[in-house]
Length: 177
Image (tube, rainbow, N blue to C red; front, side, top):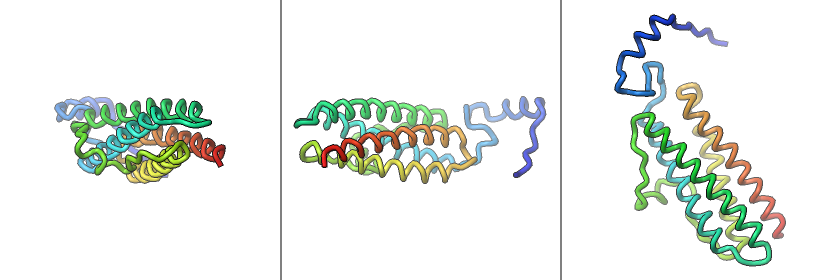
């Protein structure tokens, strides 16, 4: 275990007055802010693409199990939108600008926007997208480590919900076989 020297209150007060224009980014922030902002914006694109795909699937769901799947798609869409909001808020906290440009969303997104042919295909494509998000967010969590614990926690929270989504979708898919 490493030893951490705690600052006295006068040192903390002095440091807080320096570079106040940087807001939440203090002297102790050790991550590469440009890299973190890119990771956040790419993840924002991922969440927005997933939101849009889930909404389309919600409206397009037909068939025997359509109501169960549609309810799941709608719930997941709302949660993806919440994830996007959290990521956008963090981007602003770090002094960046959230990139909502629709022209570049699909090229920046980790997951693809796939319409799907039929209910089973929609469930399958959403499960693939969740698995992509899980892997990419795990890597981001590992990359951030102790360099940016706030952003890491945001990704950990989102990751946990993406794993729940994947579990839900795997159960739906299994029920269709």
